[in-house]
Image (tube, rainbow, N blue to C red; front, side):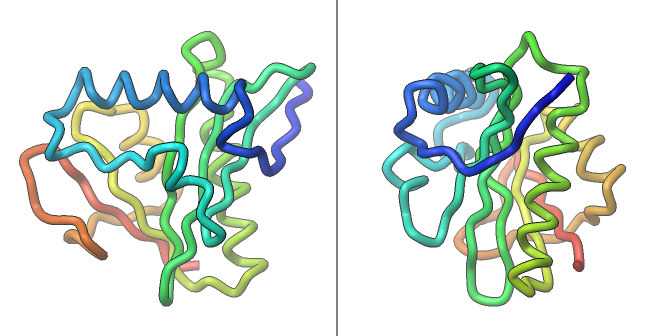
Length: 150
């Protein structure tokens, strides 16, 4: 599999399709007050970069890095159902870590949901450790919070 990971506009129709699918999944699993996904406009902020994993012009997955004061946050991690099991999420996460290291960001943080066991396993296998809520997040019935020192 020859996949290229590079920045992609959240308004690229291929990225929009992935993000809409991701948002629909989150809405089907979690109550509205426990959904923290960023909409397409929010992903266009200058401190956020969305990356796409592409093969032969097809966008198979995406993940964003949101730069904050003293850390960066992993957002919008999603792999299309037909591309799951190929290691794309790990490759996207590794890419975000390289970007953060290159930018001298000392810490990556994220919020995920307890009904996403593959995501939780990926984060734990790659060295993320549980922590409490951060930024504007609040404790709730489904959110899990992680961080990884770089």
